[in-house]
Image (cartoon, rainbow, N blue to C red):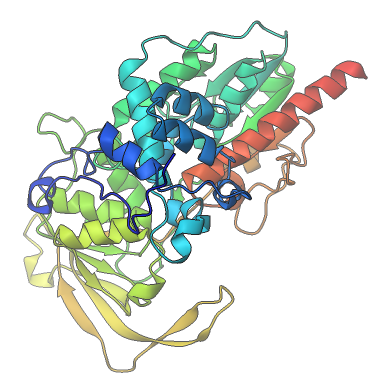
Length: 473
């Protein structure tokens, strides 16, 4: 096969910014078969396969790309499916630029191979053309409970089901998918794709129980002692929002990004006939610079607002994916860099008879400059004296990160957590409670979908070993 030595990736077809900023349809349109084959031929099949080492679930990347180059897209899907339970998801939301593509040899002098775009193409091709559901594996007679149906829980459940385990996933919300359905907007990850992946796990025999808040409806002890589960995996994520504790955060019109996105993504509040309201604002400030901040800002933009991102460091330090930042700028979102909020301003006292009294009316910020590096290795932002200024608005969205819900800690005797509220687990996911494993954001704090999947995969193997060893004893 002749390699394609083109220096840059095949561009991803997208909706035009002035069109997509007014709808919730997916922004990226995906490669055609011709584009995928052309991009696949850019892979030079390095002997040491650095891209595989960069993938948290170790997808056999050169092998699946070789099948794409040959035009055998179903064979490519089978290669990916050996390692990943959610390829259509990962192809859309993984930060490939810091993982597989970040290790790509082609990226040393030119652009790396578009691994994520190819994974998305292969998964979409399979979902469109393959109508056969995966077959369930004969039962091995052992039962495992999985708490949480986000990427860690779904991956753990899928891997265990393929080994013959009777797996039940307990989800607190009314729809399975975790952060994939409540946190990531439709324009980045259509919910029909998540549902397709969930349906595939059900076909493998995984049972999913929704509206089940473990720690309230059932305890971990009850799952083990009364329901007969030999092991429990905790993949409950990190859904507890953080705030800045500045004056005015309790005003109306101030949201956590979690609440704002859940109302929009899960409850479809952006639809005219939705029973869940959402604030349609004129001017919105989103505080934070990560992917969640970009998601909240781009959602608010689609709801008709002028949107400002407020971030205390420079653009070079933005933690969000470069692609998300670029898309946000194209959609008209204003970036206020080296800026930090100090107070959220209420409506004026003379408006006391107005029904809007008690709402946020502005945000007071201070300019920042970068000083010496802090513990994270990034230069620490330092306030510039006398540089305060106000931005008039009617909505503030705090996207300052999240931490795990403390419910499981408080209801599970002996479950060790760290100072951030994260469950303490070893490299294989084992916790301080016998037979209880954990992984994903519940252990690491908010991270990426693929890292959570990797943790679920590792824990599934550890649970299999744990149960087999107990059976031998």
